Image 1 (cartoon, rainbow, N blue to C red):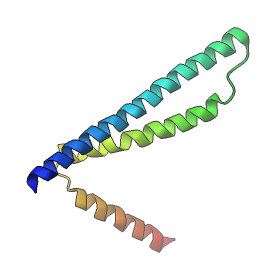
Image 2: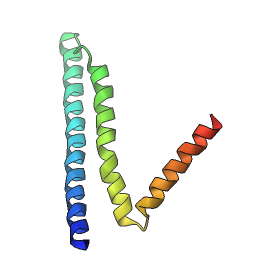
Image 3: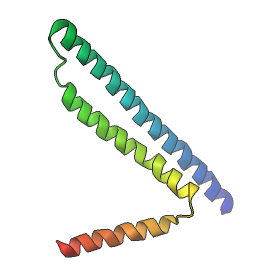
Length: 100
């Protein structure tokens, strides 16, 4: 059983790294698109249509893609129990539902 857990942990670490690379690629694409938009605006006085909307989506994707690797880093580098995090999150949601 312990061997299975270690294999699953290794698989989740690899998957979170791939997801983090997707977020990094999204940020690089955003930087390239923004530079192209600035160049088009400066050289031809005609910006690329929709870059602002695309930037919002790319930033959201990059943030969402960085959550698994940061959570994995926090859990593996400290003595935080993942069960505690789940219980804490559920209790916060219940408190907010009770207040509303």
